[in-house]
Image 1 (cartoon, rainbow, N blue to C red):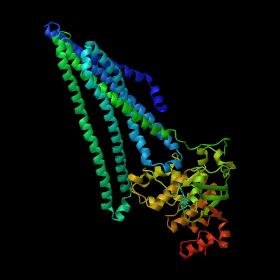
Image 2 (tube, rainbow, N blue to C red; image 1 turned 60 degrees about the vertical axis):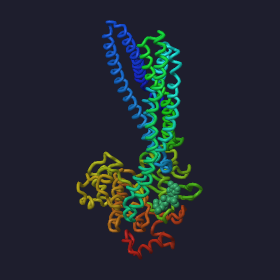
Image 3 (cartoon, protein in one colour; image 1 turned 120 degrees about the vertical axis):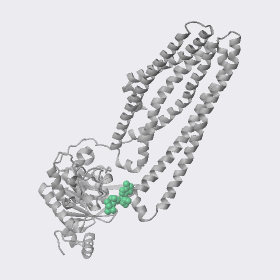
Image 4 (cartoon, rainbow, N blue to C red; image 1 turned 90 degrees about the horizontal axis):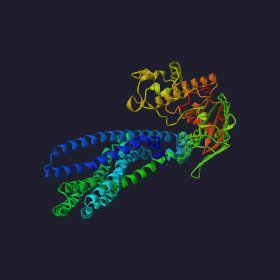
Length: 579
Ligand SMILES: Nc1ncnc2c1ncn2[C@@H]1O[C@H](COP(=O)(O)OP(=O)(O)OP(=O)(O)O)[C@@H](O)[C@H]1O
Ligand SMILES: [Mg+2]
């Protein structure tokens, strides 16, 4: 609840203002039945001031309207401010979560926290504040007024009206439970729709539309059924509340008229009393509702805070080290890594100097991408296993560490923006000339001519969808433009044809030699790796071979076998070495 109070406390003066306005409205509202009662008695006495009562009434009504408008407006504003702050903080904290956490958690669930739960908290803020003030101020003062008008009459009518509070409590509890079920089913529904629409290509290709529609209709029907229960329940609630109020009124008529006949109560005050029964029904209901909304929003707030206070990516460990700006070396020393008792990497060691090119090859699942994740600390490596410029990377602040590397991930991702924006993502201030150079280096220039608006073509969800090879090269251009000293290519040329590949590899080699950049390139193709200074063969998490391509080719190992196999397939177009 800490955050909740922090936001409220920041604006406490405005909240106080709203509460005072609420109290004022309640007070004025309590005057209305009395004025009405006095009016009736004045008519009975044929008193001349009767006409003024209309004016009193009008005056009160105007005041109430103005005040109500003012507090609703202010309350709405406060709720929105609260919402904005909480949502901003929430998103900020999501950005700091470790990747492992985000992979483990269901993204749909995190989105639900950002929408449904946040809405629940905001609703409580409005309804809770209004409801609570009304229960305390309106409820208690109405009871006091009714008792002071005639306590005997109050005792006879109080029964049915207090049942309202109990009913409202049970009703809102039940509705809340049902509401949660409805929301869960709705979550399922949107999740299914999203999944099927994103996977529509696979669906179509396998002609599975009717099966998918069937699954969707099942959930759709379930949503209808649960929602219908809610509709029925809500339908019965209000009329029965009204009925209970009527019973109280009937009792008041019956006993009240006796008191009037006996002269213990004037007719006008009986009318006022009956009006108070109506007034009291609202705080009675609010009593039930606010307790439930409170519980509900507390549960929601807890879900939001679970993310806000979840353990974040650890920035660095003491002692803090400054690796400087220049890249000198990257050393991996006996790096082991296991997940759930499965060793993904086992005592991997190698050293990369400034300007060197390291190729990594190995079968699928050998741990190549895992190695990149550890170097970038996307997953935390053991202490004393990865060193940048001679310093343990765990002692280097994350943003500084990551500024040394430009990663082209295996499953590269383009944002729904223009090509230019996508390329500039890693360094938005890059000049157009630099962008053009990066495009040339990554062999995108010819493709560019095909796009309707060149660099300003929208890609991703709302624009042209790029081919696999084009996407990869946009990602390479993005990495090149970042000016970071170490380029990490994770199978970044897998979807590029062999002719383009040769060109690209040459470009990258020249570019890195010229700028003194270092490269680590993971690939399944020998042709991509022949230009490296060093090749590392990773096999089931272990270093199987390490040496220059020539050395490895002379050995009768994995690399040599792979080379010959790929040569036979005619895949290798000799980058440096010809058969
Ligand atoms: N988040 C994860 N949770 C559990 N296991 C994982 C996770 N990420 C990777 N693995 C496992 O780790 C092993 C190594 O995966 P990794 O992605 O490093 O392989 P790779 O060498 O890059 O393979 P590929 O050539 O197919 O890209 C695999 O067996 C994979 O199942
Ligand atoms: Mg991989």
